[in-house]
Image (cartoon, rainbow, N blue to C red; front, side, top):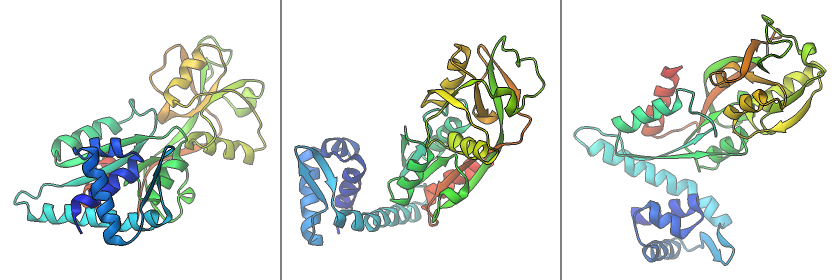
Amino acid sequence: MDTRQVEYAIAVADELSFTRAAQRVFAVQSTVSAGIRSLEKELGTVLFERDQRGVRITPAGEAVLPALRALAEAEARARTAADPRGELRGELRIGVFTSVSYLAIPRVIGAFRRDHPRVDLRLRASSAGSGELADAVRRGRLDLTLFGLPASAAPGLAVHRLAASPFAAVLPEGHQLASRRSVRLEDLADESFVDAPVGFGNRDVLDAALGARGVTRVVSAEVTETSAIPAFVGAGLGVALLPELLVPPPDGTVVVPLAERIEWEFSVVTRTSVSAATAALLERLVAAY
């Protein structure tokens, strides 16, 4: 089986576009299309459906894709083993949160790229949160992702905890509770809240903890970029409860510890068997925390 055809099929499956796939593998679209047709003929099945609505993976394609990815990873391992310098090779697809600029993640990934220039890094952010990112790892569309839900929310996957962070209250400057050494949940009972949408790890963990305590609240504003939540708090749209690790430097807000201990776990999720490149990046992420 032509490994270049395998690369084309993986790119089309990830991009769901022959045009974007061709750009990704540095080939013309006609070459990618011909390579896919040749691979489908060799396998005796149709991998992709193409019409005016776009490109879709067939059930047969979904079944074949994990084996194609395994072939690509095996080729990368062979090339690494044959390299006298042992340079890592292959593709590494990483799932990230929409807001990571104030975490150590960009620094770690940037250093990894400099040290392993033959690894093709591809970052994907999800506007739907940790659950969708973990599902992408499960389906083989990502190799590694950041994860903000409990380990039990990722069955069948390997969850590597990086840190645990308590929730704190984010309040506008001048708020009547801003000078407190800590605040209790009952102190915030009459407040409107700014939070991430349901499906984001920090939101789901907090909702579960509040529900277990019988606490209800009104979320008046949902913001998909966690780092932007304090800005909305500072603008007077409400208060927020966020893991301390996710709170950027204050700007018009005050961060006050929460008296009740509610903890958010920050993890990385992979499949149980990973490539050499995935293992190398995972080791760096764990060391950074």
